Amino acid sequence: MIFVTDKAKEKVAVLLQKAKVENEADYFLRVSVVGGGCSGLSYKLDFDNESKQGDQVFEDNGLKVVTDMKSLLYLYNTTLDFSDGLNGKGFHFNNPNATRTCGCGESFAV
Picture 1 (cartoon, one colour):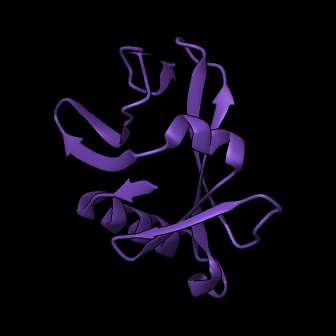
Picture 2: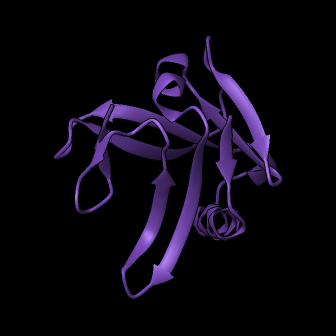
């Protein structure tokens, strides 16, 4: 499961509206893990409207979140949050599987 805070849900809705995609209701948030970053793995967020074979689909807090099976191994029980405070603006992942994160919070290791 991937969890979504109220602030993250609100920001995703704003960004989806700004993207001006047709049939907005058909789109979901795709969360994945890719190689790279200071700590070896990085998070990736995209809007998508097509499921792929092996996708894992979750809905939390009214937001549909999709990830591939490989990424789910790293993201299991992760919470997606959004901060707009002085300590950094943007999406943040509270990942219980991460053993190390970099200073920017965008990459991690397990």
